[in-house]
Image (cartoon, one colour):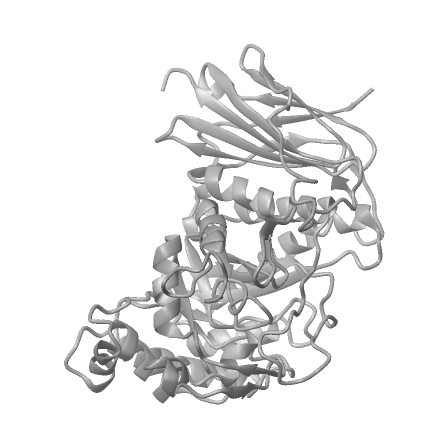
Length: 503
């Protein structure tokens, strides 16, 4: 007999409107993300710009609202001027972040072209490792100023009459990390970020700026770093970044699927620091969060190229399992629970490097298991997040206590007259009955009940078996006098889409 769980959702119990940028992603000059991923001029599907059409199609289907670029650790040693102008004049340079050779065939303008093709905005990052105020203000002028100045006219001479108008900018990347080129103390970074932000805003007052938070909650400087950086930058920035990755390298699936509770606590902690600084500054501004790197990363610290200075070698090409997809689903639900403060988030990364999409150089493209929860959340998780009242059996794992088997959230899209429930059953061997009280919406009908499941938790999709783990529409959700009832199979990701009849 299945375990039982309940959920009450009411259209008046709102958390926040979802900022579409919650479903952002990230492309760094790392491994085969750029070269062999989005850009491969000799590929059979390549367009006139060298962009892989199969990758364009797979990414366009995700409806990704914003993509962070060009890094990542890469940006802390990157001179943006090396990636603009005639391709024949561009330098081949050593990338010290990933020990590869950067050809600079793709740069700011090409990425802007590509982002337009996939329908995404660009979250641009500036180098605060080896560079600072001057390079950053010049890049803003190059990208966003219409004309009549040296850098804007240089852009025009490169074939881009209209400015790119990038609005969201990261002030460096993981500047607290000793692995970072030009790593800094919190005071060093905070002062530099503040002065850089001022100059960038003087060029374009409409910019939204993201300050670097800690590289992870495991950093010894965590919390002190945030407090110090915000003390020095609060008036000049709009967002504080968070980065977090999780793995199941201990092969403890129950504990792994509970790690979204850690993400939940991380977000609460950083929110508290931001609000402390708001009080300290007597500010009226509420700082928002940008979780602009998150994912499952099982090969972290390994899977580097063994031979230095190759061009775009395969690196960090994790093969994702069903349980990885369930974890990603739990993380997406956690992000939605914090939609009042987390306004932007980037699954890192988008293609080939710890990514939902994989390609073979010169060959096919396939979708990993993690593609599907990301796709469903992006397509159906738009609207207002509702605060759920849930009841579920719980379990204890190695690192967590009272972990609910049911992880769930709902989103109300009033314009479409739809309610979507995202639900993960964390139980590895038993189904879970779900009974949802939806009476506040009046009469509803089931549009579909999508399920991602497999008998094998470690099942994957590969080049030869690309459809081994794919969602099906065979879920058994049904309506019953103001309630929706569904059986959530063991270890499954579920999307229950409801139509409001009197809409």
